[in-house]
Image (tube, rainbow, N blue to C red):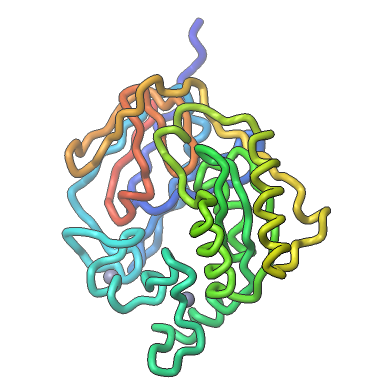
Length: 282
Ligand SMILES: [Zn+2]
Ligand SMILES: [Zn+2]
């Protein structure tokens, strides 16, 4: 007798970055980006591993910051006006070293945001995604930030008082050739061996010490590992795109980073932040 199939998940909402919960394996939830109304409850995805999943773009795109209808989106589902005016879409979100901390002629777009986000302690870490890399994030974003990147293991190395200071150190490391990017196709082809991170971490830590950046105490620098819900890694990574194919369907073979891995291809859900979709899972 085949096992009874789970009830169809019928989740309708506006996509945004999935919510992640650390665990073994990591758990994933669809999260609704509705701004001007009551958002739909989170939809658990992990229980549908191995099931047929359908994701249908309903043709409507809403700004994830202000909620207005838009034809195209910029950083994380922002409409054009929001991308030009809202602090969530300011330059320092992608280039922390350009955070205009305390520049009187060029203040943060929003003082409350600056106090809550930019002028907070940030962690400089190393993680193993497609390979070893350096990165930074606000302390409060951990470990979600590592999971969003599909890191297999990560180690916090130093803590700096604000976004700009940590961004400058990361930029300096990147200028010296330390990787700060993830090759997403490689990240989706399997998990690298966790040991690969240690020698990289030691080289980064040595540079930080050379520059007088204090390291976190050793017990706080311990590696943290993550296992993702994956049944089968794709042999060839085919990218699915809701702009080209409004119906994306296939057997859910895995979830890693912000990607759903279907037997028909992979889709970066974060890239479609703001898209209203209907999701079914048999
Ligand atoms: Zn907007
Ligand atoms: Zn900033």
